[in-house]
Length: 412
Ligand code: FAD
Figure 1 (cartoon, rainbow, N blue to C red):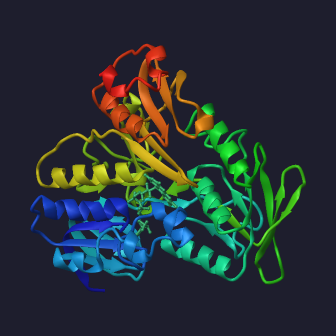
Figure 2 (figure 1 turned 30 degrees about the vertical axis):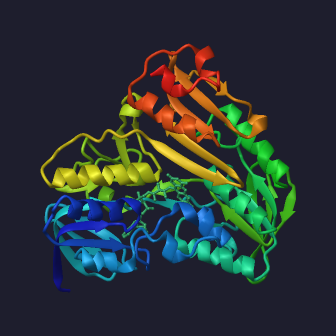
Figure 3 (figure 1 turned 60 degrees about the horizontal axis):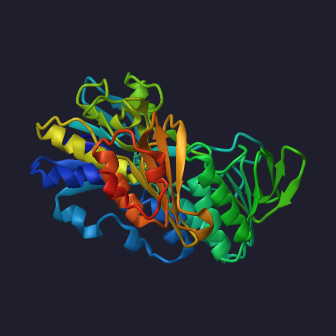
């Protein structure tokens, strides 16, 4: 097999990979850049896959990270539909599934994650959809176009909830099954969980909490036809949507000897323990300043984007530590949730505004200091809350935070 070469090889053509290539060129990097990705289409945004794209409100062209010709214009080579299977860290090369070998000077790994599969019989039947790639959303849309009307969504995290909202909008009967006693249990406080449970119920979703799935049933053609719950209940359906998290896609890095605990370990400028190998985005476990230095992985566009910028700067010789305020959003029905900061280890919450008005903010506190804001249809709180967190605000009187008439910026 011929050995090819690029000065920077980027694995993954998602948010992190694409932004790394863009940022390198923006910083004047003149060497060759090759992006290798399993996706067969040019880089696109993933969030719309469970929102506007799935709903049919945005075309693929509108979710592309850059127009197709951008990559050639910037002399960024794309190798699509190609998976990297191995890394030779000493030899500075990667091997692809087709056996080709590509050498690099610097490697940026932005492999994201693979959807966690259901650990039960029937997990791989057809019409069981795991929403991660455009191909997954396209397959769901094809099933809907072919007449699927009853859906069971497994997982009450953001992806499951967004999919449920779109499916309701498209006229499906939706049952949402969550193993834990509340929705969004891993990422939000009880106020937000209760609000979204009641909103989804109001929109006609049958929300079942504290409820596990023991089997997905199928017909003779191998197509999902129902779900069995752990209390024996059988839910008939035409499709199953699974949103139960991801497994970081880091196999080749670990096989090459990179230190890894949860994903792959990276330092303050996203270097792995392998020479000249960086890792960014969903798969990168890093000490986060906004989690009081705890080592975490973040699954957000913000994190992938900002880590990509950190690495591009590092490659250009500016080793600035990764320090970016985490933010996130989720759209469900007409509700726009915007999150600033991380609520890890919060010990109190303050509610600003009334959830019944469908416009409110949950402030998360630790030792009396605000550490995160979940803002539902409260854009001003989000913008001003970010400023408070960026300023490193100390203790604040909860009564002031609770007053929705008092702009958060006045607390600066
Ligand atoms: P990805 O964007 O997932 O890119 C990883 C790429 O690497 C993939 O194309 C994958 O195929 C490829 N790859 C993996 N292994 C290999 C290999 N061995 N060889 C070659 N290629 C490989 N975040 C938000 O902030 N807000 C949202 O509202 C939001 N909604 C989301 C909705 C959905 C449906 C999904 C799936 C994600 C959502 N996210 C959201 C999360 C966000 O999309 C991710 O955090 C972000 O895409 C991470 O970027 P990344 O580069 O780390 O990984």
